[in-house]
Length: 231
Image (cartoon, rainbow, N blue to C red; front, top):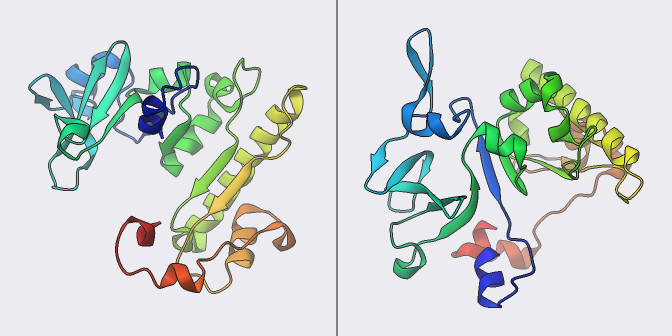
């Protein structure tokens, strides 16, 4: 999307930004290079150096080579290869690399584990991140992948987490008189559930009648290869 906006010369439109929060996500920029330690043990950061870049520790590119990170003109940038678009790779130049950066300037898309989301919801100093007394818009959508894995006790815990997040975001939206949203959009994804509306309704706390089942058509299922099939 960002590449398309650049190609069209739409300088006035904001480019999408992305952040990732796992347990080992650095607290700040310094921990990216130096690492964060607890009782002498490395617990965060200390990303491997690779020329002018650091290697992103979360995933690798299509060739199983490291994805590269650097600061570029004040913004975080990640690229699948050193040459990016020029050799068939990709570049994202609005990446939030640390918890501090994500908290101060929330990205448009945040990839976060349920464990870290639970911790942030419990911390008063992260209330603004969820739109409570904040100067920026609260998150408007929640997407959970592979929801069929959320069963038994773990599923009950995730269900309560989704309900707490919905309540927090709903209250933040309704406090903002200029925000037309009154309820966050919650999406659950899975390819192996027999009755998706019932399962997602029970997990998320929505009434089954309020859940819309979006399934691929027969034409979609006929695609055998390519990016369209993956989508």
